[in-house]
Image (tube, rainbow, N blue to C red; front, side, top):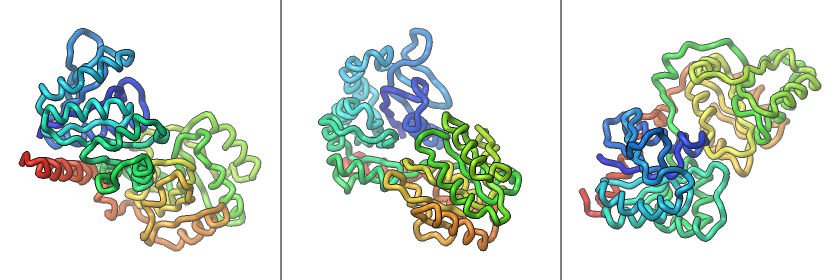
Length: 353
């Protein structure tokens, strides 16, 4: 299948969660042998109009990010000439969705829009116009699906598809040091690590150990808080780790605590749950993390530091695992199948198949 992806800005321009998610979708389809093309602003050196990397062909529709209007004007005709089976566009900027809609009309191909929602969804006229253009809108969670519907999207075309993980890699990496509680996230204003530290401080008369993975501008603040709470001898700040190092840490840990105030999809938590961790989520209105543990007997949803501490104690009664096959549906191959099934259904609806 030939899929034309549209993203004015890519992870090569700016490394954001949204751009990382979009690249992942390209990669998992390219891994399955599909013909994957990305129409974007040029980011490579030289005058060539295309650039190939990891079985993905990038096409420079404009010369750079400063040429947004040119990108919008040229895109419909570039897509029509490419004649793809499906067009799959990133939601932001909203203008590219409208341009991609014109391209899909000319190419007679269905339009899918990837709406990740990292950083929120702008309340603009262009956003509302964009929600009405696709044949399908893919979001990472029910939370973002709700946001998109609130901005005018038809709920029948919104489909939550999670970020994928690699289950084979999870099984292959050996377990790291045993630890009772682990946390992983960028340590910034939204980390809310204090919830976990305060909960652990209430359990200082118990025997436990904890690790924190991640770095950021608030790391020193959190280290001082652990010291002030007199638990710094049992909380280890590990800093940034590679994916394999993080998986090893998760396989050695018993509980993964998710307390961040904003999270469109808890990717690190998913890696940890697949690696056998019990999941404890502190509920927040702008976080989708609770969606991963609802209805699961190894998951806890809490609303306060006191409940978080109680959940950590209760989790101690559950067996330690180093892998959980419950999360096989989140594997890269399974998520790729979700996209391919959606593409084929849209093609049937358009009378293409």
